[in-house]
Image (cartoon, rainbow, N blue to C red):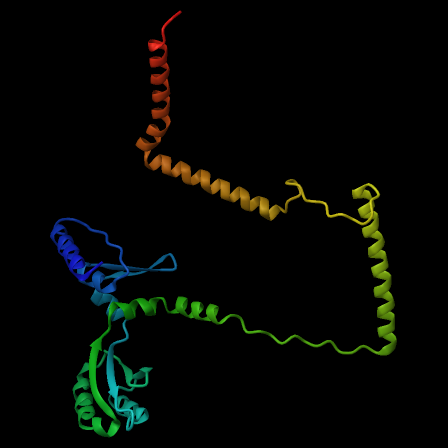
Length: 274
């Protein structure tokens, strides 16, 4: 949707919100913050939090973000973090890119921000900082923090399981190895005899044992249960749909009957008698 149309829809929703309850679902968090009095965030099919935008930012936010533009030649991240933690000990580096860095500032003690920014302004050149800015927590930060565990699981799934080394069997003594080979040969001969007998019974004495296809009755019980669950789900869905929209269900049942009855009546009426 283009920005002009989005603004028009926002204005329409604002004009209809007086005296009404409007439920809006969106993935555009700025839109949710602008239009909503209360915001509910769902994650993994469950409701995680409900409240106003300010309440969610206070409960799940990360405080403030100090965004810095680097001078690549003279930037010193260690000294910068020491300067920030001198005023705000719980501050931490959030992102550290090639030309940009981000420091998370706690929002509990905002009175120290003035002295921090004053010292940063005075030592910006020696720290290799070309420019800096501060921004508040957004609803996107809240959403990412609530879905932190899910994002971690997705990252682990993309990486795949760590391959485990296959243990190497220890070599057997020569005498025991000969005995094991003899036992394997005997077991192979016995299995071959059973397979030949089974093939003769199934194929009527033909050469070799042919594969016998499984019938529906011989299907694994797990597959049968899965098919039964699918059919049960389809029937339940159809029943719920019929209960929710009874008018459509009645039309689907009665309209063909009425049409067929009318057709037969017209046929009997218009057909000349001999």
